[in-house]
Each structure stands twice: as structure tokens, then as C-alpha cells.
Length: 97
Image (cartoon, rainbow, N blue to C red; front, side, top):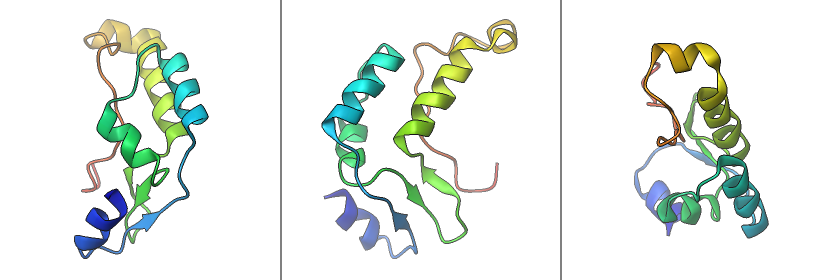
């Protein structure tokens, strides 16, 4: 489903090999929360999507886990921003920001 949807956008996106259910289970454990169903479904078809310039439109699972844990654990972020625990980052904007 996701591969067809992405291909139908006419973009020059690159799709990675999919993750496994075991990979998703480990990610859920590391993050302390389950990934949303739609994101799980996407990752089971492709472990990330990059555009023709190499920009990660959808991050690979390892980056999703690593970046979210960094945001949640970084002491400076805790003082500067709201808590990141209820949030889940999984993509770049694709516009260079």
C-alpha cells in the first residue's frame, strides 16, 4: 500500500528494505510507547524514504529511536522546551529546514 502510494506521487523517492516485527517491538520497548499503526505499517514496507537529493522524508527506524531518545534525554532540551516524551518525531520537512 505505502509503496504504491509513494510511487503514485511521481517523486523520485528511494525506498529502503522493510523492518521486521521484531525490530518494531524493540523500538517500542526503547521508546516506552508503541509506534502509531500507520507508521508501523509504513516501516513494514520500507525502512525510510529519501528524496532524489538524499533528504530523509521518513526516517529509518534506528534514527526514529535514536533522535527521539536524544530529544527526551538531553538536559538542555528539558530546560528550553516542553517535554518531548509525548511526541514522536519520524520525518524531515523535506524543504531544507
